[in-house]
Image 1: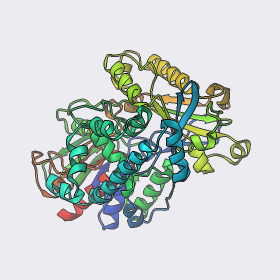
Image 2: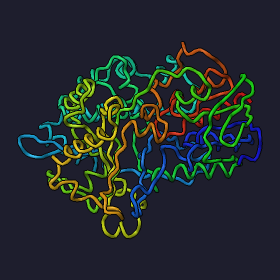
Image 3: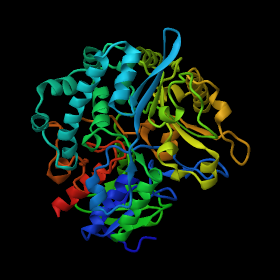
Image 4: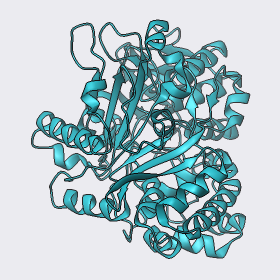
Length: 519
């Protein structure tokens, strides 16, 4: 039960962003209450023993870390760390009738050699170096602004200080840049995938939603690196909950919020424990859920577009490309059916209402980088995890029959993976205490039902460029920090805020800063 009937801040939702906000506000001396509808905190950033009788704690939903600023880790004194992957990616292919692939990692010389073997020249590697040198410089300039008040479009452009890059990434469809820069279809596809994570779009979509997704995937930490959370994703949210409680915040679980009422100065939050007063309410939930709690018209529907699959294997499968060790191939991002033309074909099939014939996906093995998520017996026996993230699987395809469609897509996705393996993946799957294969799949509709992600959209709504919208209206600190709603004392602190999305803590930080700025 809450200890009080009124608080300086009530935070709706105990996901990682809500916990970041709670920790900052409590450290500043504010009375803070976090209300979480589930029996645990963490939201999508949790570690779970997903398979009966198996001692493996998988990052069930979100699974890698890039956008979390180290300043948040330091400010809150978090006992949390990440580990870098030695291989960035491996993409299998068949060229001239023989299995081959592109390995990015293991040092520059090895990567250069892999590019040359695949493409027959030095050109693509040189273009790759120039391209990611440019995104690295972009990251160094843009990432620090994410934990500052929102810049104007002009101010961010000035910070980027490169009109060619600005025009290519902020004003033109990404496909134009990819096609101008690279000639090899496979290389083009590997680049494009960062624009399609949880985003249903074509390379030349005029809305530029693919550009916005790409931007957030290449600026993290000022480097664009995607790192493995030690102990699984739940280690982050456990550390955040500890930091929030240690600073004096109260966290109440099993307590669904059913309504928010506000006159702009004071608010009341109705939940399973009664009605609680608050000077400010921070909502760590989607804009759709916020509208529901306020009794307002919801925003246009959002739509997720991914299949998330968790697996436990007794061993990693052998590859058809025998030049690459599976431990290398799966320690980075293993791309399947993600050539440039394949991605476009899959998108068009999904737009027409069909499941992609060759479903694109990317896979990685957490336990190769961080075996601590496995019990000692599993480590000794050589068990490994696999996490698969499928693209171009929009929620609309699952509407008629979610269960049947999920199983059809899972089977097609694994069959596509098997074309690059020297043995069926099914032969490598572990079995749980009840004899069932250790594999679980989540469709966008499953994520909506389990986590409240609207339409299964992992970003809560379409991502926005990280600058102020001159037509957004409103004023004051919440607008300056990108967390404003239609009510002065109700703030968004989840992924639906400007500069939200991904496991970053940035919306939670920014909502807390807005509260503290206003006093």
